[in-house]
Image 1: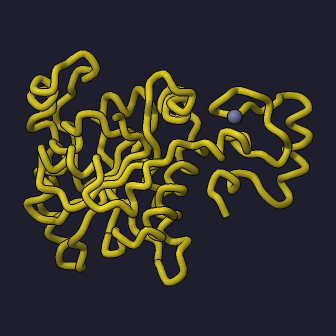
Image 2: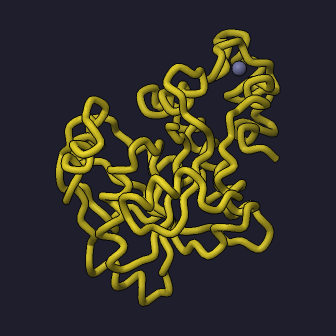
Length: 249
Ligand SMILES: [Zn+2]
């Protein structure tokens, strides 16, 4: 079952129909009013999601971008993220509109595809890229953590897979970085350099439990500077692969 469909089901359906009468739900992408059986995204927009297919594409553009900055293993993103495209609303609504179910559903979709693609079958645990505590306090949640929860469910949906643990406290963001959007590539790397610190004791404990390959998760892969800065200290202990919902071309 596509994960976009899992948000509301079963007996809650009739309550939803009732709710739609008073407060119509809109498609997160095109903003048209959703039919009762549609969830978060209308059927038309769902059919046209600009998927990357990186989950079954060795040496894909996300990997090439990351390899230029850090010796990670593999990378996958769910869809091509274009600022002018209505699909950018999916991440915007998660990050700034607090649409948690939408973020979880996108994560689950990617998790299912990565598990089916077969290139990520030896992942042992999922680690969301952390926010600085001050930013998380302001936003009240970390979007990478929401996506990670969905990813874990998506991986587990494949027969024979158990749910991967989502480990939140392994890596800390110790430097509050300014927004990256107006910086050049070199400035971005400088901006996030040494921004992340791994909890050594926890890393050793996880290694002793057989956790060797970590999937590092963020909402969007732009220059790759933030993911590389976060992956680098983790790579002293673990093999690291990367997953994001959006991939900026
Ligand atoms: Zn739509």
